[in-house]
Amino acid sequence: MSESDAKGLWSGRFSEATDAFVAAFSASEHYDRRLYREDIRGSRAHARMLADCGIISADDGAAIDAGLQAIEAEIEAGGFPWDPALEDVHMNIEARLTQRIGEAGKRLHTGRSRNDQIATDIRLWLRTVIDGNLALLRRFQAGLVDLAEREVDTVMPGFTHLQVAQPVSFGHHMLAWYEMLVRDESRLHDVRRRANEMPLGSAALAGTTFPIDRDQTCAALGFDAPTRNSLDAVSDRDFAIEFVSAAALTMTHLSRMAEELVIWASPLTGFIDLPDRFCTGSSIMPQKKNPDVAELVRGKSARVQGALHTLLTLMKGQPLAYNRDNQEDKEPLFDAADALRDSLRAFADMVPA
Ligand code: ARG
Image (cartoon, protein in one colour):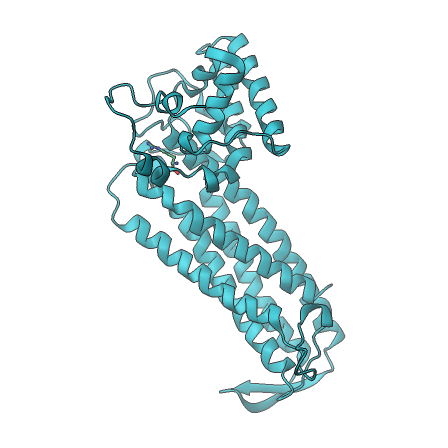
């Protein structure tokens, strides 16, 4: 796809091509391509609804659906021609669709804008991410409960001010960790519930005059309800902020646990012996067994806190409705989600049920 074809998607009234630096500066496909599955899922539901409502023909609807399925397979096989000149994941997929099935491909965008499309994609993506993190949280919790049962009679010092205070059961200590994770779990459920509304139909900001059926796309995509206000639905990213906030708090808990592991694994206390496969050594200091995984989790909590700060600041100056600032939401959101997933997995693996 050449740059002039790409520009054709929105530049009807423009008399000069986009500056090359500006095109590169605006492109997000190198990171938002991660949303391709959600983007295609949303587009298939939208196209089917358009056909069912008689807004596009049944033939066009079928061609769009088959084309989108073929594109998904092409992306998964690694053969999709991603093109930064096409800005983002949405325009890359839509341009490819038109290349494959012709004019019908352009009708997919009827009654829709990239603004409600991206708001929908992120929510769909976040739902899956939350479900994955909930499963990891539950695995870690189960490991802690088992460990607490096995070690109920193991006595260790309980600390305040890191001074030896009173004897406690190691099981008791593990269940303190468990309680933190129970609250983390309930926060994620909360975020999921509020995020699970469908923006489609909001279009660019003020809805669409096409007689669309939002209830149909809402049900097809598994959302609880369509969003109620179009200006709000395309612009606010509070659901992403809530998720990263819940993630930052979970990471703070994991960081505290990591700190305890570091202290307990140090020969200064020698309370625990971490499995070799979670540690590294040193060739010139063979006595050392470094608790790297715990340290990395403690370190990763910093980037999730940073992501929360980024997203809050990103949002605070934005007037209604959609602003391009919001394109900057994805990298911190993805980064926080990855750090949370990997850290939960590390702990769940270290404390197996
Ligand atoms: N890439 C954009 C984002 O992430 C999608 C929406 C673009 N909309 C627009 N009017 N330029 O927010």
